[in-house]
Length: 238
Image (cartoon, rainbow, N blue to C red; front, side):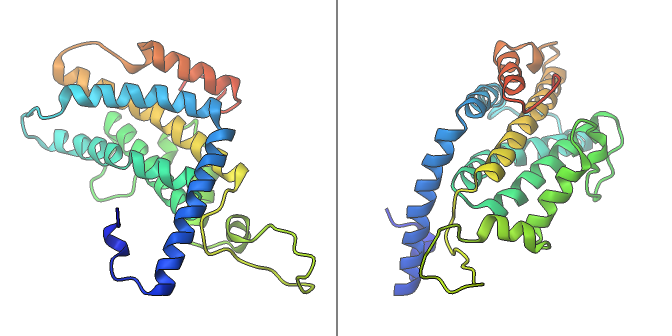
């Protein structure tokens, strides 16, 4: 099947698109093989989020400013889940950093709504998430804005060893590539943010339905936390 954005590409454009497809598939396979434990936790949390979402899909709620505020964040976050997953695992590292940064801001917005500190039109403040170090946001921003050359070199420079390459030269890749440590850090953060999101989502839906169900009580949530602890991703319950 030909993708819509491939229609009308020149010969060179088509070749680059094919190279991207080949490299992203190889990167996805490599990353998936290295992140088995985090991926298992990720699948557990995704099940919690999508199961909760499916129970409210197609339902109508009474319109209000408060509902619109939180529902907009919940909706936007869920819509982007597949895109974030593919960007991280397929080697689109700088783009993935921008998406995870947006997820971080979304969770911060949900926390601000919870504590009644949300100001419409203002960028959410991640200081409301004490278990997420401020440097994480700074590092994501460096890749998002292409602002630090050392960060860009980490994710874009060719790492092969060519004995015929001239001295003091470097080569930059034009296709996605697997950057093991960065990929792991991004996917681990993505999964932790999903845990936070699941808590806010379940609390919101429970308030609408008049129930006391909570994501942290689900066996899947507890198992995901256990896996992430064992993998050294988190030190305490999300």
